[in-house]
Image (cartoon, rainbow, N blue to C red; front, side):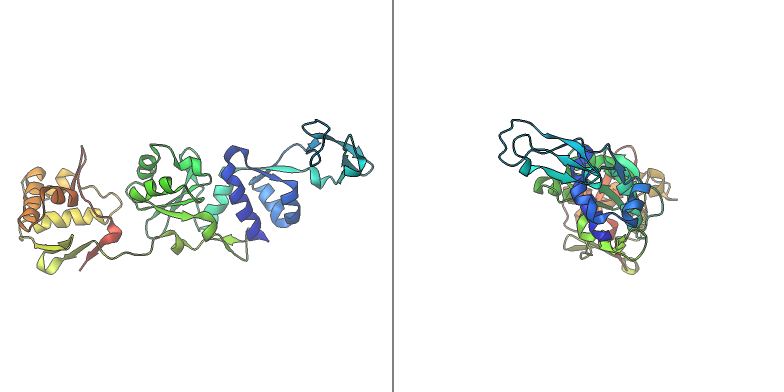
Length: 315
């Protein structure tokens, strides 16, 4: 029951600011867990309903019918046919607004994050980082992920970490756009699982990472060999330390190596070392574009490897 109401609230929250839990859906869940959701302001009770929908095929011409007190209860009266009156209880008139921020906090707790979610973009929350340093974001409504600058905003908020986005099922085009940006998409409802304590839900943090793929870049330190794109190059002992410094940064949170980091103690300029490194790959049969794709220039910051850390295998 507990897991069901939180799944229900997650699904209803796709409506955004208009997300409402009506009494007809809320009544089966009234009880201690529901009260905790009220206390956490995941649900915010609104003014009681003052009117009711008209009868099916009613010819009264009214947009709705008023609710009147009737003894210990209430009644929505049909002006044309009393047989269609609807008797109501006080609970039937209750209605609740779903608070996106508070629901995001509950989902973050379910995933094991101890800090409160922070807005990374409009209606997109940064829940926290997994033990494997993957940054997890939550969007409750698909529209929050459709803006042109959303990928850049999330990438900046992740500060170089791999990204997982918990979201509703997205339109195919929007999903592809985020996947092309290197983000891992997870449908929120697919990972909300029952738990025995708290609010009764948990998210297995392992479900927030993609299934590991075969390494894209393999490095053998002992022989200074780099395998990438189906080809191998053995770097000279003079230039391999430059590649190692880029590799070191690729495996860290900030994946960009500054010029001074690239230079190390060589007394040579970073641009010359990077040119020599790229030339070594071109001498092994890689094109100029491929060498620049592997060893990227980050304007005004430095250089980085064009391979995600999760796709690098170092021997």
